[in-house]
Length: 173
Image (cartoon, rainbow, N blue to C red; front, side, top):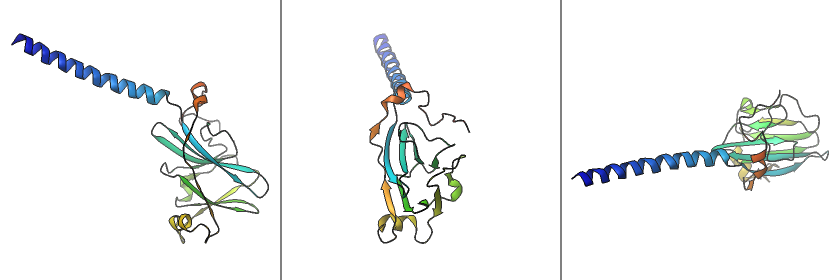
């Protein structure tokens, strides 16, 4: 009788310990994991390269437009156009002679514009209502737009050694 009780208690302790170890392991893995990213180059009429970048850090995702070619850096609110919808994977755009037009199903305030405007190719944000964003994606050629579907298939191992390896990094305004 005593042996059975000890065996049940030992089994319970082992299960609770294994559960705690798995939680700590997953937490450390997420904390230490570097980001995944993907980027697409959008060439403007004046030769400027704009990079559409999609990043994933743990369970957070972000899509932004930047002039910085380093896809491993998180978006900088001072210099980048940040789409706040974490589910976004595509950028619908049109290159014009004056710069770039971005089409979105987000309201204008849901696309964070940089505090320091770009000097070249400054994007114009247009909310797609008629046609809707889904129509623009499906019939891009008909509406003379381009669609950049950005995977997050590259890994930023360098971020293990950077101080700015998080979405929570505060950038100077």
